[in-house]
Length: 568
Image 1: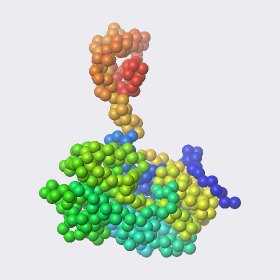
Image 2 (image 1 turned 45 degrees about the vertical axis):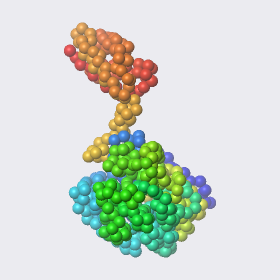
Image 3 (image 1 turned 60 degrees about the horizontal axis):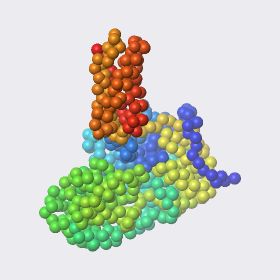
Image 4 (image 1 turned 30 degrees about the vertical axis):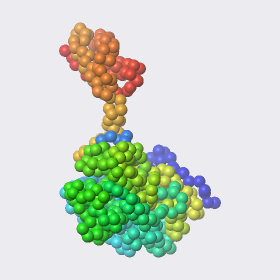
């Protein structure tokens, strides 16, 4: 009987996976399950490893100071010599952004991807002074990497040149879609190749790993071509400058902005290092068609009339250091003026809502007219909605399904779609980062769980920042800081100096602590008198408890407390 309920396994009870048997393929998700970002899957067969995607996750507000979050590669760190290739499905940061950090550990791992994808990766690697080994593939190509034969199929996404990959092995066939949708009228004419999908289905797909980002959205994703007329209308009404914010790799959206600017006699300047770099690459390779004489350097924009200017900027997700956020804070050479039109041509990535709305509020406060997806159709998603996913399930008829790329709610919605098309619920694997799935003889089984934490990039520091460090940062930012310095004479048990209290972000005046100083001194003297063998750490804990209890009761705060007890 076909099961109709599908749910997540209790991975906490699984433990470490068993030894992998010859002829069985193991799939380990090192990122991208339960989150939008740091997509990375490892396929293992007969001692060899194939990696699909290696992306980053962008930090949220509760991760202060963090620049990027990487997949946890500790599972394969000691086996990088066994990696036969890294297949990159497309050029978005959440799929390629962690490649430099992987290649720092072993720089001769082959990178496989489409022309644009590899060009974007190579530009990133150049900044890290890494020259990679690359293999350019296109739809229809078949390449073998150790025990893995990979056939590539065109898929449509919000960046050109995206690919799905069918991985053929003796253990079974796996189809990984990467990110995709089924726009039937794409701007570049390159549709998702459903004929190839049908052929894969006829051959037999033992495990389907589909994009889940829009699985909980009914119907079909809107076509990109519908955005062009909306942009044209906004450009026609704008009286002063137009600033458009988008992902720095969204070539299709930039193309529509260039076309609208050309129609209305405006010049375009790219703002943001990644925007400039990526669009230069896209133009050079022929993915971006730039009208003659339309581009100007940002430093020359002020010489033009305001109604003849378009700025194409990064920062659509409210990233603190991106160009648009800095404009909203008045911290950019581009100053927002009364009557400027700002277009946020992107979807909200879950977790970024507060940051984006903060930017919108800042821009409106400066007098800008802000247009975003909530009040105009200025962006469409790059991911397949439920209707498109249903088509894929019915075309492929996979034996097993492992939804990927999405938060928990997206993965669950995708799993339910699979069941609706007749796939037994026990063949739908709802996994999380670190889940281990074995594939053999047409059966996919969840067999274990490996450690898969967040690896934080903080400036030049990679992996040293812990969750405890971030907790300390949040405490400093939200509750403040108190230092207490005391000098004790162990022979007399008396306080020689102090306690001196210094605070930041806790109270308006340090004099508020005058009430607690005698209690700290008394507690210290009693501790030394009652037990002269107390260690310095134990005495500092006495101070921490005394002032911590008082601050919590008196000031209703829980600041970071750093007690220092010295001996005279």
